[in-house]
Length: 82
Image (spheres, helix red, strand yellow):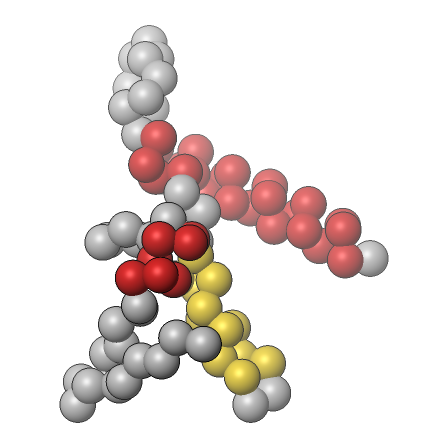
């Protein structure tokens, strides 16, 4: 089981084997979940990495499109839990 240490600033380093397994890169975000006495880190979706991969006509609000996609995905997750 990988082990990490908390710095004076409250920072942690994710071990390389964890970063590699979940394809976590510098600048990625992790969602923090608290379940009882556990802290769970979940990689946030990688949709931001797709920016520029598709050519579109006119200007697009990428932030709005990304937020809508995340909202739609969260609705799917809620439905699966029922």
